Length: 280
Image 1 (cartoon, one colour):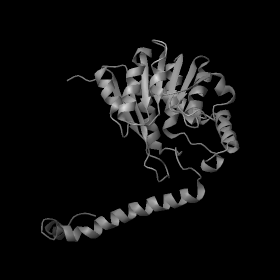
Image 2 (cartoon, helix red, strand yellow):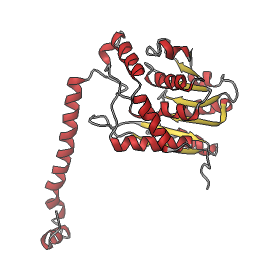
Image 3 (tube, helix red, strand yellow):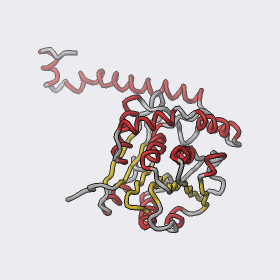
């Protein structure tokens, strides 16, 4: 609505807060009504209680492609292609659906998996073609399967998964298990045991806290090769990866999800990668 002389006078008067309150109330009501509608639909249609899955809005998916392109140093058109590739991978999606449907915990998850930010893990592996990928913090193993699928498509490389839960990674079966080395143990300890210079991509998803992620990052330093990329799912609430990147003269970037048609506000990826880093 275009301002008029009257509305300008009201906006400049002591009555402005009172006059503006109905407009502000309507704005909040519209927002909350949308969230309530999405929340109600999710409560009825979904079974998930953690690790929520959803699609990204189209603009956000394009931002994800640019994020992956910047992190890898490859053309954005190439990364878009990899994002399209994993979405079109029928074998992977069917494997996830069948395995989740047969899981003892099948009543607490949706069997149709939507990748959202996780697709970037696949795209980064396709672009970088690392010989060793390490994932710390696995849970059911959706990201593990995406990483393994990318290695299989590359035709080389292996995935090492690390989790303290001995029953982790129920989805990593069949061909995806064939390229995966499974380790049960504390992530800080196990990351410190990796062979020097062997890791081309590290995915951190332990989600514990600042001190723990910093300890993980410090432990893995000798194992990272010169072109290694480190990605964390906790960077939307932790500053540890950015601080570590600054100390080691690396570049840092964060991607934030914008879910499509879902009440969840989204999470994201932080990425540390070789580059000019930060100078003071």
